[in-house]
Structure formats: structure tokens, C-alpha cells
Length: 451
Ligand code: GCO
Image (spheres, rainbow, N blue to C red):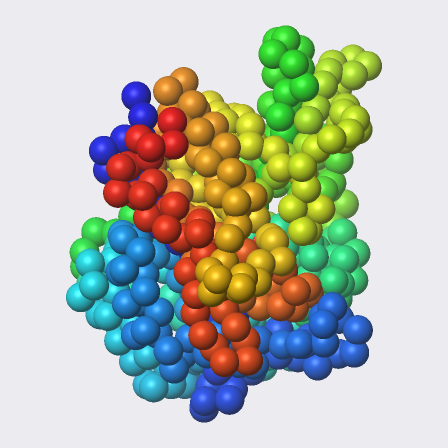
């Protein structure tokens, strides 16, 4: 079938990773600004203070996107740029920045897909407990209202939150991302519930305030498993590992997606709630499970799983010869077949890959170009698998490559480059890599040239 006619080809970025921190230009600071100042937390001791200086260079970046034939762009909005302390006061300058950015995209024929929250919690809300505070969902709702009232006539699709697994799991449980806390399971579940409620409330705001009937979704980590063989047992073991859970684990996809799409927590979480001091209130699950239009999934890799004793999933550890990205993530293209398939089977929603890509240590070669054949091969293999999922009945709706340009890769700093466009952080010069021109052809042929 190839890719559907209206398939959304795009690229993705996030505010803190590219813009330069808002507190340098009149906005508030976020937990990431705070975290980057702690010695030893960022591998190269850098921060997102300047990043790609996109705040000042957005027009030139959008012009480049246009040259590269990119029709859809997933960006995120910095909460502390729009509301420096996270609540009440709105920075008109901050809000105008996003309004101009969206206009600039539209003038250049690029559809904006906006994520409301990609990890940059306003610092002042963190001081009030951040995601642990049960007022967080109403603060988030107010923030969402500010955004949708201003931009809700022009945004093609809204995503509420990005990867709760990371800002809760890595940020609040393991302490390796901002805000760097190491909380226990009861507090983690409480924070997760506040994040899910915030998602649901934001969906309600978008539905009631947006005037252009946008698509509504979100962008969790699409953690999934690949069956080791095509036997029914292995396929069911991989399915279980993807969408079911039998122990408390913030990385489990089902802990997040069952509440959002099915209006209930997995059994193991429901049981855990009973041991907690406070439980969800009546009506919470209805708020969390507001119908949304697509299943957004950030997928980079997946383990191979087979049916072990009693059919339980068992990770296959034979990694001999597997390709690895600079992050040491396994090159595992079938993740883009099995993940979307298991998600579609269970939740019956169109699947948009909201992020996929690979880290390399690209540099500008002597000929002035950036040759990144591994990235081209990587993306081609993954896209072929996503198309195969489409042929097997999955409603494949879009693909947002991570990332448009090299950027601040969180705890890894600037060492890992994910971009289609190379950024020289000393001069801020942008150089499209070979993969950018390759992707341009993919888009122009609606993927026909890579099948
Ligand atoms: C995430 C984030 C992105 C990352 C990308 C590469 O998935 O961690 O959404 O901000 O930069 O995924 O790690």
C-alpha cells in the first residue's frame, strides 16, 4: 500500500533543547536550568542556556525547513517563557514569540504540531512541589488555556505532555534528569497521576477553546518489545511486555496508556494504589481518559523478547553483531512494526511516530558537507518497518523525525547529535547533513523511493 496519501512527514524539536533558556530573555527559569548548574549532572558540563539560539534565529531555521521540503513540524512551548513563574502572570513577549513562530511556519507552508510540555517545569512550581502538588493539574490547565486561546486558531495538532516516563522516571525516580530527585514509589505514582490529570485537563481545554478543530494527542515513550521469532508464543510474550505489566515499573507503557485510552490503571497499579495514603478521586479517570485522536509514540529501539517459563516474556540477551547508535541503543527497526501494531491492536487509534532517529558524532567533512550514511540507513530501515505495519492493518498517520537539528541532548549535553541539520555551536552555522537531502526526497515521493 505504501504510505497513505495524507501521511504526515515531519521533524521534531523541543524548546529547551534548541531555543536558549527563557530566563536570559525575560522569562522564568526551569528545572533544567537548575539541574544544569549542578556539578556532574551534564556529561559535558553544558546547559541549554544558548543551545541553537533558535529564539533569535527561528526565521532562518524555518527557511531551511522550507528548503528541505518539510511539511510538518513538531515543536514544544516553554512554559516558563510564557508564564515565568508557572502561574498567573503571562509574559506577552513570550507568548508573542510562539505566535510569530507559528505564523512564520504557516507562511512557509509548514503545519505546526505543538507539544505543551517537554520537561521544562517552571522552577517556581518546582519549589511548590511541582508534579507532586495536587494543584499542578489546575496550573497546567491554566497554562493550556493561555496557549490555546492565543494559538488555537492555527495549530494543526496539539500534544499535551512529552514522555512522562522520562520526566517522572528519569527526573524524579532515578534522579538523572531534572529535577534530579529520587522519590519512592508512592510519591512517583502520585506525581504520575498528577501528570495524567494534567494531560486530561489540557485535552478538555483544547476541545473547548481551539477554533480550528485540531487533532489532539500526546507523546509518551512508546516502549515496546520485538518477538524473537514469529511463533505465537513469542508474539504474545512481546505483546505482554509492550502493553501489560506485572510489577510496578514507570517504564511500562501500559501504566500510562491504559489510563489514557481505557480509563483504568493496570491491575498491578490498582493494587498498589490501595497501599497508598491517598488514592485517585472520583471522576479522575474520566478526566484522564478524554478521547484523543491519535496514539503518539516516541520509539527509538526495542529489546527482543521470547516466551520463557510459563509464557512470561524473557529478554533475549544475544546482542552479538547488533548495530548501536552513539547512545549504545540497539539498531532495531522492527520496533517500528511491532510497537505500532501492539498499540493499534489494543487502543485502536491511528499511530503517529512523534519521535524516531539516531545519535551520531557527525562533523563537517573536508568537502564542507556532513556525510551521515548510518543515519540514512537507520531511518530507511525503520520507515520500511512502519510502512509494513501499515500494510498489516495499522492506521499509520505520521512520522516526526527526531530531530530537525543537532541540539542539547539533556544529560548528555552536546556530545550526541541527532539532527538532520548539523549545528556548529561556536558559530551557530547550520549545515544540512546528507540525511536531510535524503529525507527531502523521501517526503517528495511520499516514501515511494525507500520501499
Ligand atoms: C526524549 C525526548 C527528546 C530526546 C530524544 C533523544 O525522547 O528523550 O523527547 O527530547 O532528545 O528522545 O534522546
